[in-house]
Image (cartoon, rainbow, N blue to C red; front, side):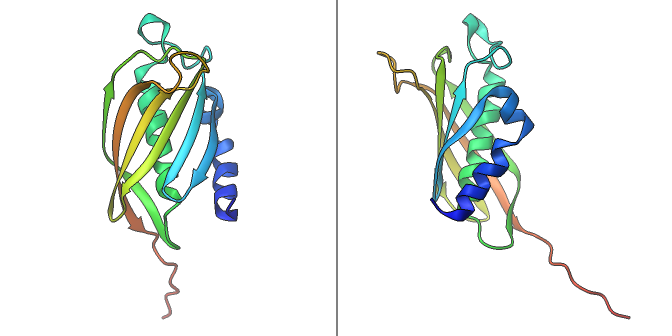
Length: 149
């Protein structure tokens, strides 16, 4: 795996929100991030004993940012999420949930498609629970210039 991706995974593994929600980065490749969300007492608060919809949206946004990060050039950064839309299809009740983020369009406005899928090895494995579209605004980091008088 690319050294840059190893560093991204290391940085995200220590993120307090991901630790608390029990999210791990499973795979990174250019323009794609696959995360695993393990059911726990923190992330279950939704209807019918499901993972909370706000948790799903937050993890989808994080996955989108991570997928986008794999394509950033030197000096580029994600400024903010401009838009996030989510369609909940089924309650997320599996022990393991997969979050698969793929960059659809890269540019100043980057569009990422995210699927939230059943990850358990049973008859529902791979079923689509939610579909998410995230648009991120990219910018350049300000250069450090020396001002002389």
